[in-house]
Image (tube, rainbow, N blue to C red; front, top):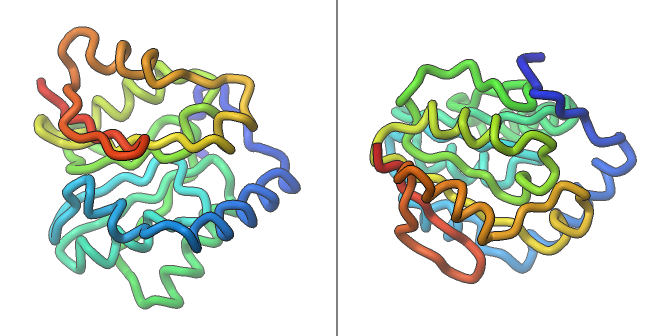
Length: 190
């Protein structure tokens, strides 16, 4: 496992409960629309940071096609196993899994879009993770951020939207380009 910045895996039982809840919630969401909202297109390099069972990963892999690639990062090996099985099931060979809590191992300024959905509240050292995301994103690249109630309620490390905005906008690193029902799209400015 790559650097985890002090982050620990959630217990297996909690992971399974979270997966069941996310699977039920998925029935009431349009994942493809959420992925497209961030501007993912054919040929893009996408990082799904805290991919969980891979809902965004699979949708993004279909959209980026064989010319693109999706990196599915999670600290939980069970999550990555689920993603790999789904990739095989759907015949997607443009997904690479990364077992880590922070360090992506990706080149600087190489990624077009990063998904950080329902993950940040559970991360212990948010600053390290946000710095890693900033490092790998291209200038003009987009950070798709969403944090639903369950991820915030199940964490003792929650960060408010205002704190996130302050951190990302501070120093003119990012600017908000879209916001819809708690789904924020930030663009890397420099």
